[in-house]
Length: 105
Image 1 (tube, helix red, strand yellow):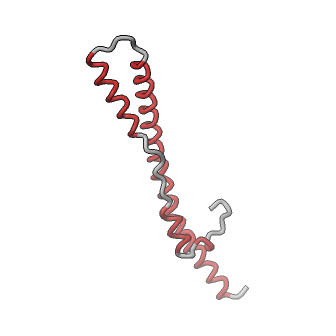
Image 2 (cartoon, one colour):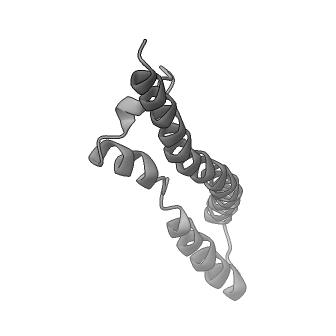
Image 3 (cartoon, helix red, strand yellow):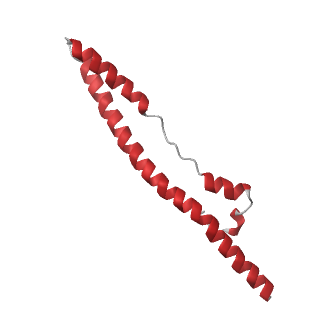
């Protein structure tokens, strides 16, 4: 192996490490976001259950109708995953993905 090849390989590894930093940071942020979305989803499911329990009641009090509407409208808060792997897309678009020697990536 020539010295220039060795130097280039070293530079490529450094650049790959630099580019991998962003997906790692993004993944960490995504984990935090996913935890919040799971918590929100659980709240929506509980509200859906409470709304269905109100529907099973024979006699509704005036407050029941208001509560039912609140519970049903709260189910619209569940919008689904918001994951956007921006840094990975940037690596692919810039042609830098081939610098990464990891099969997992």
